[in-house]
Amino acid sequence: MQKFDLIEPTSLDEALGILGKEDTRVIGGGTALIVLVKNGLLRPRYLVSLRKLPELGTSKPRGTGMSFGACTHLRDIERSNKVRERLPLVSAAVEHIGNVRVRSAATVGGTICEADYQSDFAVALLALGGRVRVRGLQGERLISIDEFYVGPYTTALDTGELVTELEIDAAPQGASSAYLKCVTGPVTDRPCVAVAAVVGLDAAGACVHSRLVVGGVDGFSSRPLRVTAAEQLAIGAKITSQTIAAMSEIACRQADPASDLKASAQYKKEMTKVFCRRALEQALGGNRGG
Image (cartoon, rainbow, N blue to C red; front, side, top):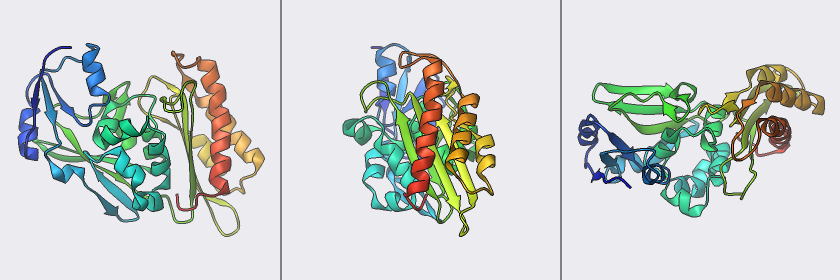
């Protein structure tokens, strides 16, 4: 493994000043970054640890949702009753990430910046319209999650910027949600296909809110697929088994996965249909609160 210098700034301004150096990377929990460095896929000269910046490790209620500092550990999200009450979809997705040891080390910022196309977290974030707050020497920006992911393992972060916070709104009051993933290996594996569904009904049973997001089925793109045509089909309708089947079929047609070591592209397309149906059925069956 290539040698590197580990730098631990004690202020955000100090960290931003260091990020201007060539061949510099920010490290959170290191669960993914260190593997890439060990395998020679990344060759940073400097790694900037944010663990001595306590302001980046806090989470708090924000409106109906929550905000999470970039250094918040996934295990803290998983164990939080407040997150479970306000953002059950996020709680469910986080529970599927790796194992307890991974979740205890991995951070919010590192997880979203990895920009892996096989992400549990990104699928839930897109379904709820998450936003990423980033900071650089030139100031601060707030980027929607669908604009944050721009390509395979690539984000909208400019050189010298880092993620400081993740903001997530709760689903509309009364909406229900579900997160499911398909794996071809151990249950702790990254998803072959991941699905998040959010559905809200009015008093008459008609759909007034619909989100259907599928991860891992847009080539190697880090941005999950939001199936807007399926969402639009549901709005204003009473969702029946036929509606769910039609929505799942639309998702299957729009999916354009790449074959990899986990599964063939055709298998992923078929599982898109299967898991969209299951997620929609589960969302309509309970988990009130979004």
